[in-house]
Length: 169
Image 1 (spheres, rainbow, N blue to C red):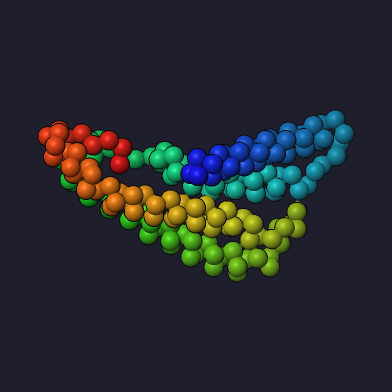
Image 2: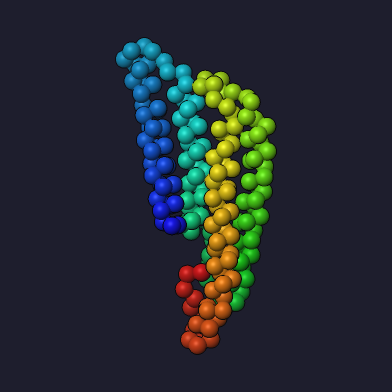
């Protein structure tokens, strides 16, 4: 299920970048060869870029590809690693909930305002942040519950192994 959602998100972003590329190239050709300008193309390509960034934010979290500095983390004892990892997830959860609330308020408050070239609602600029934050929150909660559920199994593995290695948590 998670891979299917991630695949849909990645396909969506690939479509967006393809459309965005066309929206950047076609107006250049139009201006140079036909002396005609496509006024809305720049604004619409920026809108697509915003959607890619915030959907990509959630996709990166699902893939565990967010940037982190793990130099100190790698030398910590296993118990401290678990605590720091859980603290990081809770911190991400609080930021994500903050983003959901504020992007919802901002989307609603800006929905009646129109973008100048396309006439689309300004809310479409903030909506991807709301959607990306909701997706990220769901996966953060799934990861937290999974980490708590598998805590006993990890401790048993470490105790029986007497090793300091813990696989992918």
